[in-house]
Length: 257
Image (tube, rainbow, N blue to C red):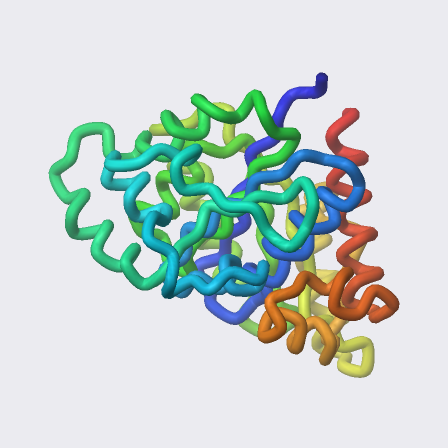
């Protein structure tokens, strides 16, 4: 059996397609026969609800894991996709940051929990909050790689530099095995020159770490979460569904390298 890959999906900027990527990449990997666990580490709980669960009715979440009161096995739930499980989140996670102040080895809580269960999965994907807080640091410490969704817009590169700096800091201090999985462009609009310029600029500075697949602006992708479905179940023939399938194939390609 190939080694499990733990991938954090992160960008400190909100609204870049991070959760959309977490939901749909996970769902496509599961559809392709992989055993996948997606960890919703964002207090908004959008990955949880985007996979068909009523986040506010869930009793035990990632919050209980971070406080070391439950294990991942206790809180994970089945989703609407076969082979895909989710560790849910909701607004209760907001308090974790404060409750973890002063706690010893607080950066390693998630890693210790993931280490106990990772042999049962091919992929563990963590949807991080849109900020560089203790939860994000936990995710990066527990991960093999970081996947960064970038919106094709003028300020995209500014945020990327800061994020790469954080990844390097975590690598130096907490997780020397951490690597950049790659950058994936989201919300691409082929009609604008700006989108094309951003893509070219990032490719110039990052080279091989940029995914070939580009996720377009797509109405159906935006609608799917409100129906609690990943895009391949909501509208399998949409451009958004095709793009995330291609991204999943690229991620699987890397698995064999």
